[in-house]
Image (tube, rainbow, N blue to C red; front, side, top):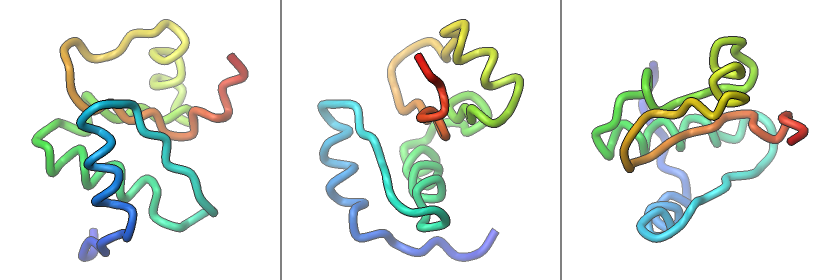
Length: 85
């Protein structure tokens, strides 16, 4: 993995995460997933537990069954816009 490139929205996202859910949108390949994963790691959470990608079959099944990690903290649902519900 290369060096992380700071995104201009990072400060705003961190501030909003203190009190609410945050959705990150933007064009393809603009760094949305990279930013989300960076913030998750930076907060001390495990990506293996806290990152679910709709495009991965096992993750998709957990999302449909609403089987998420216990406890508070960051949870990343990548490509969730593809879920019709």
